[in-house]
Length: 141
Ligand code: DQA
Image (tube, rainbow, N blue to C red; front, side, top):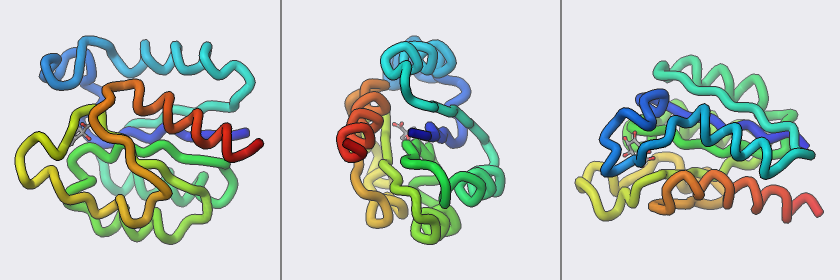
């Protein structure tokens, strides 16, 4: 089973960026934990700060992989192009946000992605990624 974890802009700074909101752990460290939690899964991680590169990655894997866990960062609130790509591909996508976007600024309350995703996990910290993967696993059985 192949699953892509796809992170958007500024998520390369996890561990350094506003730790009171996003925590102290880098995503690379957390991804190692994920890999040990799911040893049988073919887990891939990709991060980009560039909208077009995120689109290219969705197009590349989105007709072959079994699931995509997407934290689009701020593009969540701005990118119709990424929303269109989620709608265009056949691989199911789960939207994840580390922070509770609904408890933050109002511009974070709207997501262009949510209606195109099979589900949304918000505000559970990095654990949201694990929960999304658990869901894909459960659905495949
Ligand atoms: C975020 C929430 C977004 O509003 C923000 O722009 C991010 C991170 C989260 O994981 O909580 O970059 O997606």
